[in-house]
Image (spheres, helix red, strand yellow):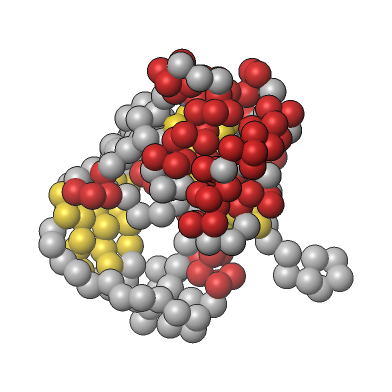
Length: 251
């Protein structure tokens, strides 16, 4: 930044990441199409090499207790015991049975690092999540709680309870800073003439309720959400208003 380069970053307030279970396999085993990946897993010799890699790098025996399989939230070790196989074999079986589409949560980050990163003035808040809902097809499995809890968790734990930064700084990290960074004009700031995308929350009571065991839970303390000036959420209930639109650069 001292040289004029616009360096920023983003972080979420959790110590676990989430990605596809297939990422425990070596890079060469993940190349190509899904069909090609499955063919490798179904070939005995190639499967042996994949399991050999998994058992030697990057996972040791204790790590299997730190991986949650997002199908039901159980640990990888629990899944292996259910299947009566060693963890590396369980990974292969689970990927084949689910057409390679299995997500996991992995506890790989430290609280100290998270505090330092989130507190930095050039760091924004982002969820890194896909769309989920506590109903319908989007309610399946036990995804990372970041889907529901990222922003209320920052307000509750990192701002109100632990006081790493004030509420205005927390809001800036979630609104004006990311809007400016990705080029969304007339958004991210309460100003006459701007689009009225507004979240009204009770700072004293806002609370993240989503957990790894029960992730499909909305936060408390979010009173209203307005999208383009229309009330979309009223006291925890969606009003049915569909006032949003796809936002593109300079939208």
